[in-house]
Image (tube, rainbow, N blue to C red; front, side):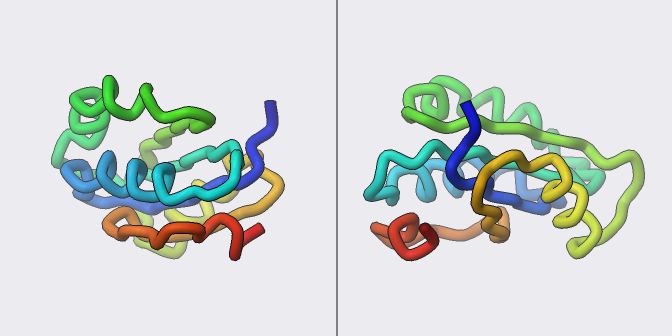
Length: 112
């Protein structure tokens, strides 16, 4: 099923914060939007995937979310990492954010 909103996040050494950001975004929804998180790992050396695996149980309890992580082959910087993630997004709406934010309740109603 195609997601309603693709949330693109470039990430470099944001591993410890990614799960909290994803949960903040998912839990602040006020619609039944299906969310796709596309994370462009810009050559992190903090075991980003390990941090996400450690939070997997909590992340998997969230309804209507998918998470994709793409590790870039070389470091590109934020703008190019965003573009790499955006190229993988499949949602009807593309939303770009950072990997260390918290979203307010109802953000999705404003975006949609």
